[in-house]
Image (tube, rainbow, N blue to C red; front, side, top):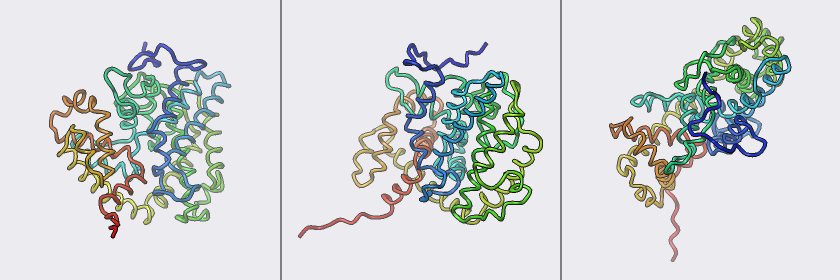
Length: 375
C-alpha cells in the first residue's frame, strides 16, 4: 500500500504539536514562491486596486474553503483531513507564471522544445526542486508528503467535471484526478473560488455590471462572491460522500452556465485580450534577453554579477548559482542539448517573477537611467 505521508527524504522530527500535513502547510506558507503570489495576476492584470484578487488571495480562499468542506464532511463521519486539504489548497498555484493564464500561454509556447509549460506540473516542480535549492546533500525542495504533491499536480480547476472520485494511486505526472478525497475537494473548490471572485472583481473594475449577469444565475445564487461560494459549497457538502466529491445536477448546470458567462464576458473582454497581447510581447522580449545572457555566461555566475546597470541579470545569476547542482549536474543529462538546458533555466526563472518585477526588468532594459554630471 502506498504511504501517502512518504517524502523524498525522511524527516525525523516534525516539530512540537505538528503532524505531517501541518508541516507541509507551513513549509508552503513560509516559502518565497507563495509570498510572490501577492504580486501575480489572478484575472485583472497587475491590479492597483487593493480590493481586487491576486493569485495569493485566491490560494488562501481555496485553502480556507477546502478546510471548511473537509470539516463538514468529517462531521458526517467521512474520513478526510482538513489540514491535508488546506496544504494542497495553499500550494496549488505556486507554479503560476506572471500575468496569470495569459503568462502561462506564452511560457507554454516558449517552452515547446522542453515539453511545454502548465502551471499544475510547474507547481510541483517549484515545491520539489526550485523553491529550496539543493546544496550538497540537503533536503530536496520543500520535501512535501506524497499526498500534498499529488494534490498539487492534479488540481486543475479549469476542468468542467463537478463529480469526481479519487484516483486509485498517486500520479505525479499530472493530468489525472488526485488520489485523495482532500485533493478532489481542492480541485472542485478551486473552480468555486475563482468563478465568484472573478465575477465580483470584473464588476469592481467596470468590465461588466451586475445587471449583465443572466437572471437564471443571479436569481438563484446572486452576484456577490460570498453568495456564490456559499451556494456551491453548501451544495457540495450535501452531495459528496466518502467515494466522491460532487455537486448536484442543478448546481453543476449553474456552474457550467457561470463558467460560460465568465469566459465570454470577462476572460475574453477586449481589455483583457489587449493586456494578453502586451504580455506576450513583454515575456517574449525578456525570454530572448535572458536566454542571450545564459547562452553567453552559462554557469559562470560571476559574469552575471558584473552588470551593475542591470540588476535583473544579478538576480538571474543568483537564481542560477543557487541551483547549479540542479541544472548542471542533476538535469544536464535530461537536457544534453545546451539550448534546451538554457531554455529550461530561463523558463524556470521567468515563472518565478512577479508582474511587478517583470515591469521593473523592462524598465532596466529599455528606459535609460539619468546620470547626473557634477561640475
